[in-house]
Image (cartoon, rainbow, N blue to C red; front, side, top):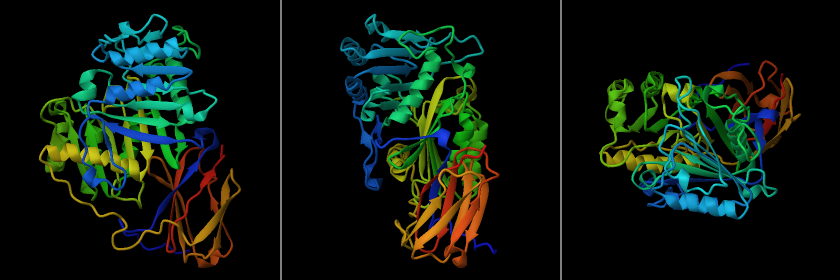
Length: 477
């Protein structure tokens, strides 16, 4: 069977199908994703949903979420200071109305806001840095993870510590996600640090840093979008960061606070030299780190160092914000691109596969980059020069589902002339493929996956009649 010609990079009709393993995917009917920024954004580059600039209101927004808690409130924040007492007041109020509150904070940071909590609020300080363990660097909050009403469950995370400077002066982003499965995954990780599922911490069982284990829940379907979750260091997060970089086919943007990883810098330059448009902004701290030379020489004017007031405290990456035909995504969380973040610190990272989220973060990046005197290339969307068919003129059945070894594709209705099926793992490696020609389309086509390990895969369908997607569960051992 002959292969199809090579596809045109930005104008190929394509769609990513998500193939997910039963024990590693969670889905709920309720899912909402909201993104927030502490500094101005450029909504002129919005593609429909404007980014939300919280003008001196990040702390108040956190308070509003705390106020909605009904049953449980689990907080793991690197540094909370008394400069924003409203958070302690909201937590105390939640405790007084019967919410079970637990709080984990870092031992090496000031945390002057902790004494503002009432004595009944249970708290746990991370182990002191003795060389083997570094810092509890998370900044997340889990609300009502086990509520009988799935809509109550919310996760708040991002780059911001909880103090007035981080909320009002520094450059930070946050994500609030209303999804019970994701909330339960965050709470399970909190429980591992806490050492118990109950209200009292168990010091003999608590695990931090490299002493934690991979709990396995990494992939979630939220509003039809794949959301990945990783905790450092057990989950090998930097490999996921590099996989996100490698997924970019047209454009790639990064906003970073602390950047000391030469391998990440080298990969960004490799993507640039391969034809991907790459641009980035970094906090001035990078000038004393080795990636600075790599990035300045490799990206030139497409790399900017933040100047002016406020820390540039973001830790996010955007891939293919302009390319709906690819896999647009945004990666964010607490994880700096450092050796310690990947091997010692407690960190959390989210990867949201969604063109809307990617564009929202691009609005923030665009504002930051141009404020530093930079000019960003306007990259045409993949629909330029042709129309991307959002819905195909055919349907397809995929069965059995779950599948072991192989599954069947059966086209129904008006059939396309061909369908090219490509299967990728989440590191971007092609692990299976097939070309279905016109004759095959009239019946069932078998796609063998017996050589694949249990895991999360991406299937790309390219055809001449439209695009179509579905979910398949693979149960290989």
